Every structure is written in structure tokens, then in C-alpha cells.
Amino acid sequence: MKMSGLKLKNVIQRSEFAVIAITIILFVVLATGSDIFFNVNNLNSLQTSIAPSALVAFGMMLLLILGVFDLSVGATMALVGISVSTLLASGVSVPLAVLGGFGIGVLVGFVNGILVGVVGINPLIATIGIKFMVQGLAYMRMSNLYQVHPDFPASFTILGTGKLFGIYYQFLFMIVILIILSIFLKNNGIGRRLYYIGGNRNASRLMGFNSKRMIIIIYIVIGLLAAAAAIFSIARYGNANRYLGSGIEMTAIISCVLGGASLSGGKGTAMGALFGVIFMSLMTNFFNLFEVSSTWQDVVVGAILIIVVAADGYLTLKKNKELGKI
View 1 (tube, helix red, strand yellow):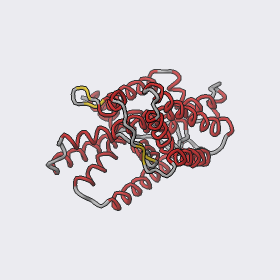
View 2 (view 1 turned 45 degrees about the vertical axis):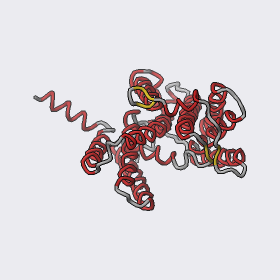
View 3 (view 1 turned 135 degrees about the vertical axis):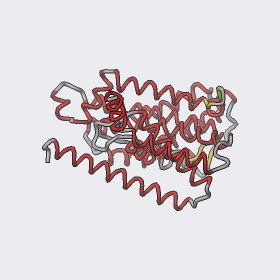
């Protein structure tokens, strides 16, 4: 009995427990309060909303564990989406077009990693600067068009619309990435090293950890994940526009902090990021099913951002006091 009590206490104390609990509550509210929540179209919409957002959130979680973040992921998605669309429209093969999209993600991630990890620019300034540059490139690629409507080949659209036993390929891909990252962070020495670097950059440097190289690598990883999210999105909807990925960076950060990450670094799990995304997607679904004004959606998202950042700041301050740092 005592052992089971200890196990329950350990579960409750896990950083992602709170977001899992409120996500389950919201799910029950939607399942019991809406007649169309389990409608096939609604469930399909949830899958294709969760998968791209979760991919970006996974990358953001890795960065937050390191104590940095990326505000350019939304712009990266827009540029990747537009570039892949225009490549396909010009007759480039699907593999080459997709490879080109991933190449853009790698390039943006590498530049961010150099600016933050090597040059030492604050991630807020560095990634906002890159965001506007990448956004400008995306707008130039679009010229005066609002969106690109190429005739995508079936071998490309299946990436966004294909299913296996009713589950979208992109959702299955997200689950595979979740498993890989969970194993990487828990059982791999390099993954555990991220927590040491994010928890105390100076101490990790004395231990011989190369934080600069790690920051560059993880920025490249989030660039790749943002590119994958963009490719799945345009393959699903059959077009690309300059607003693809707009605001996703803030959704990803909120999801990660809800899932147990900290803006000061050293904390977080891939599972926590996923449940944060599921909560945010269910909340949006709640607003849509109950026909709540989009203006109120923005108010609630803003309030959640303030609450989670304030809570994170309070917990960080409390921890620093306990450790005698202040």
C-alpha cells in the first residue's frame, strides 16, 4: 500500500501531470457537451491540427530544455510551404521538392544556431530578426499572390491526406518522432546532456560539454521539424500561403511550458509538449464547436500565455531561492 502511494505521488509530481489532467477534463467536457465532437470530420480536423503543431512543439521543447527558443519557426513554415509548392508547380519531382523544403529548414536552423550559440546574440533578438528576413523572402516568393494553388501530384498529396486504419500518415509520423525523442531524452547520454546545459550553462562548460555545437544542432532539428510540418500542411490542404505557420511559435511555447518546460531551461519532456499541443487544439475545438467568437479565443490564448509565463517565473524564482542563488 505504501509503495502504491509513493508511485501515485511520483506520477502527480511529474512535470507533465497537470497538463495531462486538464487535457483529460477538457476532452470529457467536449465529449459529453457536444454532439458532433466524435464526428469523423471533427476528429480528422483534430488530427491534422495536432500533428504539425506537435512537430514544431517537439523542436521548441528541445530548445527550451537548452534554455533558448525560436520565434522564426512560423516564418520558416511559410517559406518552406511556398518554396515546395512553387517547385512542384514548375515540374520538380516530389522527392527533390521535399528535399528542397528540408534544406530551407536546415539553413534557417543553422543560421539561428550560429547567431545564438556562437555569436551569443539573445535568442529573442536573433530569431525575431531571422523571422522578419525569412518572412520577407516568403512574401517575395509569393509576389502579389495570396496563395499558390499548384496541381500537386498524388504522390505528394498522400503525405497530407493518406491514412492507415483511419489515422493520418502525418499523425503516425508525429508518434514516431515522439517515441524517438522520448527515448533520446531519457536514455541517451547526449539527450540527458541537454538538461545539464540548460540547467547550468557554466557548469556544463566546465564539465566539457560543447554547448555551442549542441545549440546549433537543436536549432537545425527544429528547422527540419518546421519544414516537415509545412510539407504535411500544404499536402493536406492543397495550397500554400504566406500566412502558413502564423503564430505557431507562441502556441508551441505555451504548449511546452504547459507541458512542464521552463523558459530558464533544464526541464521538459516530449510527452509534455504533445499534451500541451493537444490541450491547445482541444481548446480551439471547444471554441469552434460552441461558436465562441475568435476575438475571445485570442483573449484566452493571451491570458494562458501570461499565466504560464508568470507561473514559470515564480517557480524559477522559488527554486533559485532554495538553491541560494538569490
